[in-house]
Image (cartoon, rainbow, N blue to C red; front, side):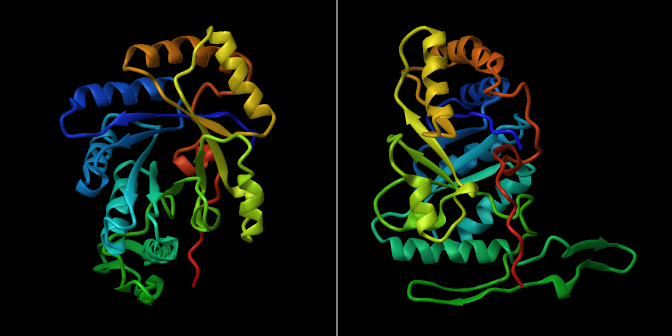
Length: 290
Protein backbone atom coordinates (compact mmCIF):
# COMPACT_ATOMS: atom_id res chain seq x y z
CA UNK A 1 0.00 0.00 0.00
CA UNK A 2 1.26 3.46 -0.89
CA UNK A 3 1.88 5.62 2.16
CA UNK A 4 -0.43 8.64 2.27
CA UNK A 5 -0.59 11.56 4.66
CA UNK A 6 -3.57 11.19 7.02
CA UNK A 7 -5.71 14.11 8.14
CA UNK A 8 -8.11 14.39 11.05
CA UNK A 9 -10.00 17.13 12.86
CA UNK A 10 -12.20 17.65 15.90
CA UNK A 11 -15.89 18.47 16.26
CA UNK A 12 -17.47 19.50 19.56
CA UNK A 13 -20.01 16.85 20.52
CA UNK A 14 -21.54 18.64 23.51
CA UNK A 15 -25.29 18.48 23.72
CA UNK A 16 -25.64 22.27 23.47
CA UNK A 17 -24.13 22.32 19.96
CA UNK A 18 -26.40 22.18 16.92
CA UNK A 19 -26.19 18.76 15.25
CA UNK A 20 -26.77 20.34 11.85
CA UNK A 21 -23.50 22.25 12.30
CA UNK A 22 -21.69 19.11 13.47
CA UNK A 23 -23.01 17.18 10.48
CA UNK A 24 -21.97 19.84 7.99
CA UNK A 25 -18.46 19.94 9.46
CA UNK A 26 -18.15 16.16 9.19
CA UNK A 27 -19.28 16.29 5.56
CA UNK A 28 -16.82 19.13 4.89
CA UNK A 29 -13.94 17.06 6.25
CA UNK A 30 -15.12 14.07 4.25
CA UNK A 31 -15.09 16.15 1.07
CA UNK A 32 -11.52 17.09 2.03
CA UNK A 33 -10.67 13.39 2.26
CA UNK A 34 -9.92 13.55 6.00
CA UNK A 35 -9.41 10.09 7.43
CA UNK A 36 -11.15 10.74 10.73
CA UNK A 37 -13.14 13.19 12.78
CA UNK A 38 -12.81 13.22 16.57
CA UNK A 39 -15.95 14.09 18.49
CA UNK A 40 -15.21 15.70 21.84
CA UNK A 41 -17.56 16.24 24.74
CA UNK A 42 -18.38 14.70 28.08
CA UNK A 43 -17.19 11.16 27.63
CA UNK A 44 -18.80 9.93 30.84
CA UNK A 45 -22.19 11.15 29.67
CA UNK A 46 -21.89 9.30 26.38
CA UNK A 47 -22.51 12.39 24.25
CA UNK A 48 -19.68 11.69 21.76
CA UNK A 49 -21.08 8.24 20.97
CA UNK A 50 -24.57 9.63 20.43
CA UNK A 51 -23.23 12.26 18.03
CA UNK A 52 -21.01 9.72 16.25
CA UNK A 53 -23.95 7.37 15.74
CA UNK A 54 -25.91 10.21 14.17
CA UNK A 55 -22.93 11.25 12.03
CA UNK A 56 -22.69 7.72 10.67
CA UNK A 57 -26.01 8.33 8.88
CA UNK A 58 -24.89 11.53 7.11
CA UNK A 59 -21.36 10.46 6.08
CA UNK A 60 -20.08 7.51 4.08
CA UNK A 61 -16.29 7.26 4.34
CA UNK A 62 -14.72 9.31 7.13
CA UNK A 63 -13.64 7.56 10.33
CA UNK A 64 -15.68 8.36 13.44
CA UNK A 65 -13.65 8.50 16.66
CA UNK A 66 -14.93 9.08 20.19
CA UNK A 67 -13.15 9.37 23.53
CA UNK A 68 -14.15 7.02 26.32
CA UNK A 69 -12.24 6.59 29.56
CA UNK A 70 -11.49 3.24 31.15
CA UNK A 71 -12.51 4.73 34.51
CA UNK A 72 -15.89 6.00 33.25
CA UNK A 73 -17.31 2.76 31.83
CA UNK A 74 -17.50 -0.98 32.30
CA UNK A 75 -15.73 -3.12 29.68
CA UNK A 76 -18.88 -4.92 28.53
CA UNK A 77 -20.89 -1.74 28.02
CA UNK A 78 -18.08 0.05 26.20
CA UNK A 79 -17.39 -2.96 23.95
CA UNK A 80 -21.10 -3.08 23.06
CA UNK A 81 -21.30 0.65 22.28
CA UNK A 82 -18.29 0.74 19.96
CA UNK A 83 -19.27 -2.53 18.28
CA UNK A 84 -22.68 -0.98 17.60
CA UNK A 85 -21.07 2.15 16.17
CA UNK A 86 -18.85 0.02 13.94
CA UNK A 87 -21.91 -1.80 12.59
CA UNK A 88 -23.88 1.44 12.11
CA UNK A 89 -20.99 3.05 10.22
CA UNK A 90 -20.05 -0.10 8.26
CA UNK A 91 -16.59 -0.26 9.77
CA UNK A 92 -15.60 3.34 10.49
CA UNK A 93 -15.46 3.39 14.30
CA UNK A 94 -12.46 4.38 16.41
CA UNK A 95 -12.08 4.32 20.18
CA UNK A 96 -9.85 7.05 21.64
CA UNK A 97 -8.99 5.34 24.93
CA UNK A 98 -8.28 7.47 27.99
CA UNK A 99 -6.46 5.22 30.49
CA UNK A 100 -6.63 7.57 33.45
CA UNK A 101 -3.95 7.30 36.14
CA UNK A 102 -3.95 3.49 36.52
CA UNK A 103 -2.36 1.99 33.42
CA UNK A 104 -2.54 -1.55 34.78
CA UNK A 105 -6.30 -1.28 35.17
CA UNK A 106 -6.60 0.33 31.75
CA UNK A 107 -4.59 -2.48 30.14
CA UNK A 108 -6.84 -5.12 31.68
CA UNK A 109 -9.92 -3.13 30.64
CA UNK A 110 -8.69 -2.98 27.04
CA UNK A 111 -7.82 -6.69 26.96
CA UNK A 112 -11.36 -7.53 28.12
CA UNK A 113 -12.93 -5.25 25.50
CA UNK A 114 -10.93 -6.94 22.76
CA UNK A 115 -11.89 -10.39 24.03
CA UNK A 116 -15.55 -9.37 23.91
CA UNK A 117 -15.22 -8.07 20.34
CA UNK A 118 -13.92 -11.55 19.48
CA UNK A 119 -16.89 -13.35 21.07
CA UNK A 120 -17.99 -14.57 17.64
CA UNK A 121 -15.79 -15.45 14.70
CA UNK A 122 -16.34 -13.76 11.36
CA UNK A 123 -18.17 -16.90 10.19
CA UNK A 124 -20.43 -17.21 13.21
CA UNK A 125 -23.58 -15.44 11.96
CA UNK A 126 -25.15 -17.59 9.22
CA UNK A 127 -28.76 -16.31 9.20
CA UNK A 128 -30.02 -19.65 7.90
CA UNK A 129 -33.79 -19.03 7.78
CA UNK A 130 -34.63 -22.41 6.25
CA UNK A 131 -32.64 -24.24 8.87
CA UNK A 132 -33.86 -21.94 11.70
CA UNK A 133 -30.29 -21.21 12.68
CA UNK A 134 -29.05 -17.66 13.27
CA UNK A 135 -25.46 -18.49 14.23
CA UNK A 136 -23.09 -21.44 14.32
CA UNK A 137 -22.42 -22.37 17.97
CA UNK A 138 -19.05 -23.84 16.98
CA UNK A 139 -17.93 -20.32 16.05
CA UNK A 140 -18.73 -18.90 19.49
CA UNK A 141 -15.90 -17.87 21.81
CA UNK A 142 -17.37 -16.80 25.15
CA UNK A 143 -14.77 -14.95 27.27
CA UNK A 144 -14.63 -15.81 30.96
CA UNK A 145 -12.37 -13.15 32.42
CA UNK A 146 -11.33 -13.04 36.06
CA UNK A 147 -8.59 -10.54 36.69
CA UNK A 148 -7.32 -8.12 39.28
CA UNK A 149 -9.82 -5.39 38.38
CA UNK A 150 -12.63 -7.05 36.40
CA UNK A 151 -14.73 -10.18 36.28
CA UNK A 152 -16.55 -10.34 32.97
CA UNK A 153 -18.49 -13.15 31.35
CA UNK A 154 -19.18 -13.16 27.60
CA UNK A 155 -20.21 -13.45 24.92
CA UNK A 156 -20.97 -9.94 23.72
CA UNK A 157 -24.59 -9.78 22.56
CA UNK A 158 -23.76 -8.50 19.07
CA UNK A 159 -21.90 -10.00 16.12
CA UNK A 160 -18.24 -9.22 15.57
CA UNK A 161 -17.58 -5.62 14.44
CA UNK A 162 -16.97 -5.17 10.69
CA UNK A 163 -13.37 -4.12 11.39
CA UNK A 164 -12.84 -7.00 13.82
CA UNK A 165 -11.87 -4.36 16.37
CA UNK A 166 -12.61 -0.63 16.06
CA UNK A 167 -9.30 1.21 15.68
CA UNK A 168 -7.72 2.01 19.06
CA UNK A 169 -6.48 5.62 19.35
CA UNK A 170 -4.35 6.83 22.25
CA UNK A 171 -2.80 10.12 23.31
CA UNK A 172 0.90 9.46 23.80
CA UNK A 173 1.92 9.75 27.45
CA UNK A 174 4.50 8.31 29.84
CA UNK A 175 3.78 4.78 30.97
CA UNK A 176 3.25 1.44 29.30
CA UNK A 177 -0.39 1.60 28.20
CA UNK A 178 0.00 3.51 24.93
CA UNK A 179 3.05 1.57 23.68
CA UNK A 180 1.40 -1.78 24.38
CA UNK A 181 -2.09 -1.07 23.10
CA UNK A 182 -2.30 1.99 20.82
CA UNK A 183 -2.76 1.71 17.06
CA UNK A 184 -2.97 5.43 16.24
CA UNK A 185 -0.97 7.74 18.52
CA UNK A 186 -1.85 11.40 18.95
CA UNK A 187 1.14 13.47 20.04
CA UNK A 188 2.35 17.07 20.03
CA UNK A 189 6.00 15.99 19.87
CA UNK A 190 7.46 15.04 16.45
CA UNK A 191 10.50 13.59 18.27
CA UNK A 192 8.60 11.36 20.68
CA UNK A 193 10.19 8.12 19.46
CA UNK A 194 6.85 6.34 19.55
CA UNK A 195 7.60 3.58 17.05
CA UNK A 196 10.82 2.68 18.87
CA UNK A 197 8.87 2.33 22.12
CA UNK A 198 6.25 0.22 20.36
CA UNK A 199 9.00 -2.09 19.08
CA UNK A 200 10.51 -2.26 22.58
CA UNK A 201 7.10 -3.39 23.84
CA UNK A 202 7.25 -6.35 21.45
CA UNK A 203 4.86 -5.00 18.84
CA UNK A 204 5.21 -4.34 15.11
CA UNK A 205 5.84 -0.59 14.62
CA UNK A 206 4.58 -0.98 11.06
CA UNK A 207 1.13 -1.50 12.54
CA UNK A 208 0.93 1.83 14.35
CA UNK A 209 0.39 5.32 13.03
CA UNK A 210 1.67 8.57 14.58
CA UNK A 211 -0.49 11.67 14.16
CA UNK A 212 0.85 15.06 15.23
CA UNK A 213 -1.68 17.26 17.02
CA UNK A 214 -1.20 20.70 15.50
CA UNK A 215 -2.23 24.10 16.85
CA UNK A 216 -3.96 26.50 14.47
CA UNK A 217 -1.65 26.91 11.48
CA UNK A 218 -0.58 30.30 10.16
CA UNK A 219 0.90 31.23 6.81
CA UNK A 220 0.07 30.83 3.16
CA UNK A 221 -1.56 27.56 2.00
CA UNK A 222 1.71 26.60 0.28
CA UNK A 223 3.74 27.18 3.43
CA UNK A 224 1.30 25.16 5.54
CA UNK A 225 1.47 22.33 3.00
CA UNK A 226 5.29 22.56 3.08
CA UNK A 227 5.34 22.07 6.85
CA UNK A 228 3.04 19.06 6.74
CA UNK A 229 5.03 17.53 3.91
CA UNK A 230 8.30 18.02 5.75
CA UNK A 231 7.07 16.24 8.88
CA UNK A 232 5.50 13.47 6.80
CA UNK A 233 8.42 12.76 4.47
CA UNK A 234 10.94 12.85 7.33
CA UNK A 235 8.98 10.12 9.12
CA UNK A 236 8.14 12.32 12.10
CA UNK A 237 4.43 11.79 11.47
CA UNK A 238 2.09 9.61 9.44
CA UNK A 239 -0.69 12.15 9.74
CA UNK A 240 -2.05 15.15 11.58
CA UNK A 241 -4.91 16.26 13.79
CA UNK A 242 -5.54 19.85 12.73
CA UNK A 243 -7.05 22.36 15.16
CA UNK A 244 -9.02 25.35 13.96
CA UNK A 245 -9.38 28.57 15.99
CA UNK A 246 -13.02 28.78 15.02
CA UNK A 247 -15.46 26.90 12.82
CA UNK A 248 -16.37 26.63 10.06
CA UNK A 249 -14.37 29.40 8.30
CA UNK A 250 -10.75 28.24 8.81
CA UNK A 251 -11.77 24.61 8.21
CA UNK A 252 -13.37 25.56 4.90
CA UNK A 253 -10.22 27.47 3.94
CA UNK A 254 -8.03 24.47 4.80
CA UNK A 255 -10.14 22.06 2.74
CA UNK A 256 -10.38 24.44 -0.23
CA UNK A 257 -6.82 25.78 -0.23
CA UNK A 258 -4.40 23.43 1.55
CA UNK A 259 -5.82 20.00 0.71
CA UNK A 260 -5.66 20.56 -3.09
CA UNK A 261 -1.95 21.37 -2.77
CA UNK A 262 -1.36 18.15 -0.82
CA UNK A 263 -3.28 16.25 -3.50
CA UNK A 264 -1.24 17.75 -6.33
CA UNK A 265 1.91 16.70 -4.50
CA UNK A 266 0.64 13.12 -4.23
CA UNK A 267 0.45 13.22 -0.44
CA UNK A 268 -3.33 12.92 -0.07
CA UNK A 269 -5.32 10.68 -2.45
CA UNK A 270 -8.32 11.91 -4.40
CA UNK A 271 -10.67 9.45 -2.71
CA UNK A 272 -10.96 6.72 -0.10
CA UNK A 273 -9.45 3.46 -1.31
CA UNK A 274 -10.95 1.26 1.42
CA UNK A 275 -14.35 0.58 2.92
CA UNK A 276 -13.28 0.73 6.57
CA UNK A 277 -11.17 3.04 8.70
CA UNK A 278 -8.60 0.26 9.14
CA UNK A 279 -8.29 -0.22 5.41
CA UNK A 280 -7.85 3.49 4.79
CA UNK A 281 -5.12 3.66 7.44
CA UNK A 282 -3.37 0.51 6.21
CA UNK A 283 -3.87 -1.32 9.51
CA UNK A 284 -4.34 -5.08 9.60
CA UNK A 285 -7.68 -6.56 10.61
CA UNK A 286 -7.33 -8.51 13.87
CA UNK A 287 -7.90 -12.24 13.56
CA UNK A 288 -9.95 -14.14 16.10
CA UNK A 289 -7.65 -16.20 18.32
CA UNK A 290 -9.11 -19.57 19.17
